Length: 125
Image 1 (tube, rainbow, N blue to C red):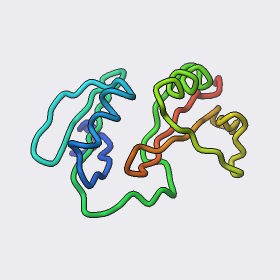
Image 2: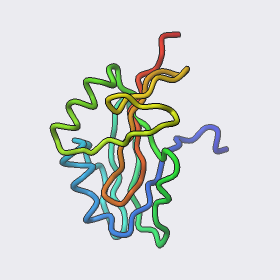
Image 3: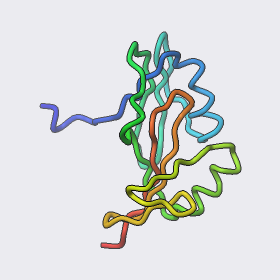
């Protein structure tokens, strides 16, 4: 049954090979597998995700994947130094790229193909 299987995100890409350096070199993620039309990455705590060739384009209207971080402001600063461009929004309102929400604090950025990714520092329970 699927409830017993690992779930992972697949990010669409027109050209996974050209998008790979953003995830590998800029974000610092380790490649675990690559093949014709896809690249699979490892992230923290055993999580994985893939970028996969797709004929569709990123809508740029919703978060497609989030990274759970202990300090969103420190993560923003580190990624800004690596050339990542963060989004500014009115809803939720971002100040210095960070929005405060009931779930915690978050910041958003796009990969080179327009997929929206987020950093989330969860609020204390």
